[in-house]
View 1 (tube, rainbow, N blue to C red):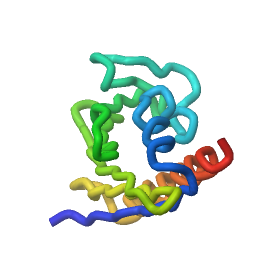
View 2 (view 1 turned 135 degrees about the horizontal axis):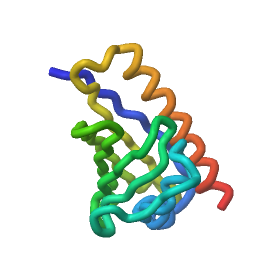
View 3 (view 1 turned 30 degrees about the horizontal axis):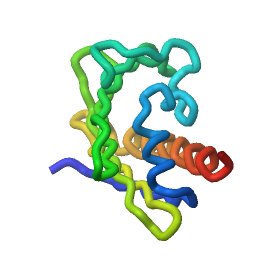
View 4 (view 1 turned 90 degrees about the vertical axis):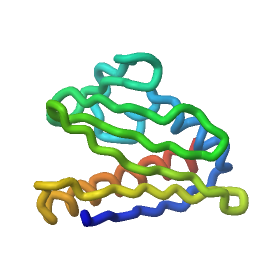
Length: 133
């Protein structure tokens, strides 16, 4: 069985506001390290390409839904898709964002830990953006 890690961030903003922002693929570049350059649909409205730190990244997004599920898959190399599970959970006037990643085969513990730290910093940028918007 592969290792998994769930990151959790509390966001002091109504769940619907956070969901409406996150469900729009074009907003990804506003809070992650995908480049500010190209961001456009590739294969319909749910697969977008972004300029990433190491080249083109394809991201397949989950369609809008009533359950605040924001799962996605990304491809940063040929034929390798990595999936993550993202949920928003109502918490009073705010929400909790959970992001679960599974360590992929051939990815070292050190690389996985580094990717998770990078992701957590992105989530903190999102939190700040949502709470000051």
